[in-house]
Image (cartoon, rainbow, N blue to C red):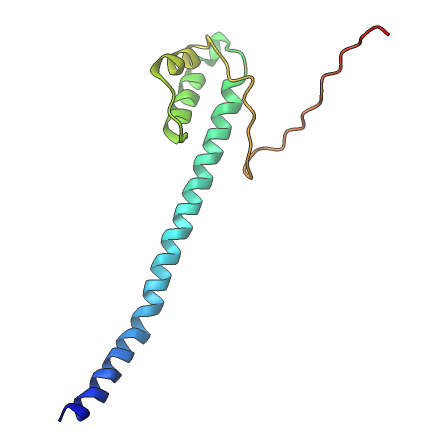
Length: 119
């Protein structure tokens, strides 16, 4: 009697697997793709915030500097101290020495500084 039950069970299992495997694969693919898209967006936000905070502060820039500092804090993997964050917001410091690296970095050409030696 067990022999007649086995093929029915195997057919049902095969049918379930045939139907469920594409859904599982699609769900995993969606989750991976969403994670990659979120990481890319966060990287672009960090690049945008750094580009704003590199510039010296002007009185009219305060709202955008506050926004950029908060944006950087939310999307950066390494969080800043509250003191540095408030200095960036107020314009007391800039991120002028920060290089933006990675595949989502904006196209920036860096020219070497040449000083004359007088010889």
